[in-house]
Image (cartoon, rainbow, N blue to C red; front, side):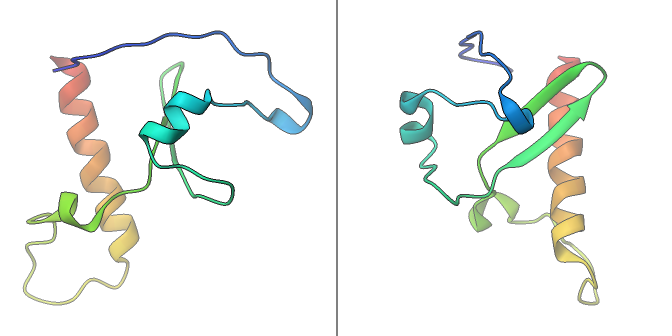
Length: 87
């Protein structure tokens, strides 16, 4: 369930750049060089802070090691997001 929604307008700059508000960057602990996760769902773009390893607890319940753990984690988070959006 979505608890807090903030909406802002930003102008798309040269090279497709968008500046995130400083308050959001501080809250999400994003700094210059930080990686973010971007998803496109229908006509929506979602930008998320990087996954913390603790949020993946239980995500990879397999008997053998994954050959692509990043993809497995990404697929898991997309699944969680899709469930959230359907609520």
